[in-house]
Image (cartoon, rainbow, N blue to C red; front, side, top):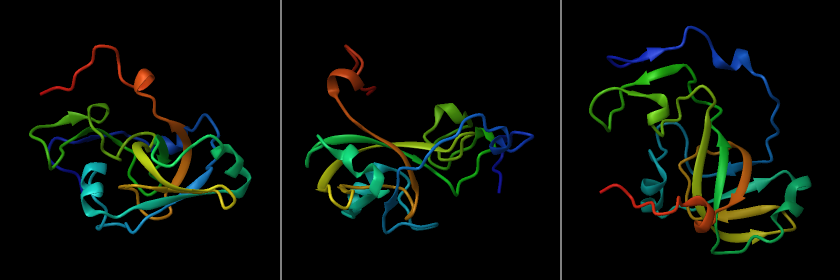
Length: 160
């Protein structure tokens, strides 16, 4: 259901796909529709961990990762809507463009979560992670290490 002020695309962005992607695995979590936290901060507050189960052919790609390391997990919000350009979020006043929000409703439903590795099973290709807001079974696009020297802009300070 659309909220006041929201604007949708006149087409389904999935019909304009221009590139192929491969899902490297799936997120396993306790979350589903109506039970998932709205973001990673809230997910961490639940104390519920999760795991990433890779397709076995990708298990060797975990080489070099370590427990306690922060990673960026890119995942495909496969059960989300894709058509909103302008949204009216519950948590904020006023309408905002999709690119000004972390909402899962986007033309390409790609989500990014910076999480911490809690366990690694190289043989099985499974990473334990500290938290996720993703629903159980959400496809994983990629895993990248997080580096403060690369991922934090020089001289950047959080808005207060």
